[in-house]
Image (cartoon, rainbow, N blue to C red; front, top):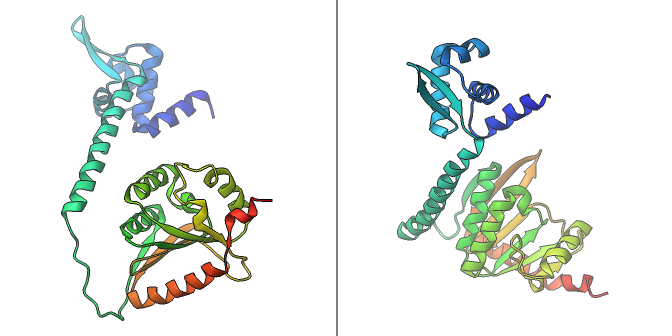
Amino acid sequence: MSDLAHIKQQLQRFGLSDGQAEIYLLLVGHQELRIQEIAALTGIPRSSVYESLKKLYELGIAEEIVEDNYKKIRPYPIGVMRHGFDERISDLQRLVTDLDDIEQSIEVAAAKTSSGAASVRYYKGRSGARQLFWNSLKADDVMYIYSEWTRVRYVGIKYYENFVAESRKRGVREKVLVNPEPRVLDTIEKYILPGNSPTFRTRVEDIRVLDENIIKIKGETLIYGPVYAQAYLKNVEIHGFEIESQTFVNTQRSIFETLWDMGIPVTNYFSK
């Protein structure tokens, strides 16, 4: 792939179409061109050139100049787009704040079911996993977790940093069971033991280890309130579900507590 083709591909990541990227790079190479020249050099119909230029004007990376009774198009540095990104970031931050406010103002009534009935919700893909994990922030008791230590893999690093920050803000408490896999133990030793990692909310004293011969832990399982939730990978695709049933969760809590009592504090693995 040539450098020009690579740059063109990168421009498309910033919202330019193939034609818009081609016209912009052509302008950069010539410094200024008339519309008919752009059409002739690119082979793009003039009507499409006009439409593409509208987008470049909107982004602030091209401008129409009138000289000697005819128009020329001049490019501006691509860095000009940074100002637009800064504005969009500010808008998104305001929306997140507004969303938190409106979430507190609007209460969604829970479906009324008999105490033994269960409500099941399914989630799919990264967006579904993000929703499933965020739902767990509503926990007002100790959350029980079986973890393969793969949460970031499901939801992405930036999302999880925000999730951890919100968990700390809400004072989420948890107990976590893991298998003694080298990858898991290495991560805990590197990030949890030093404390205050932006990507891990779990305290080292809240982690216990069980051999996979006792229980093989796959995916991420969260038990809180009346909810039993799980996210896992199936053929590279992320799947998840929530079962909302106090009766079912009571049983699952009893099982977890038994396994917790059998677990070995993870600090025992680092004291030698």
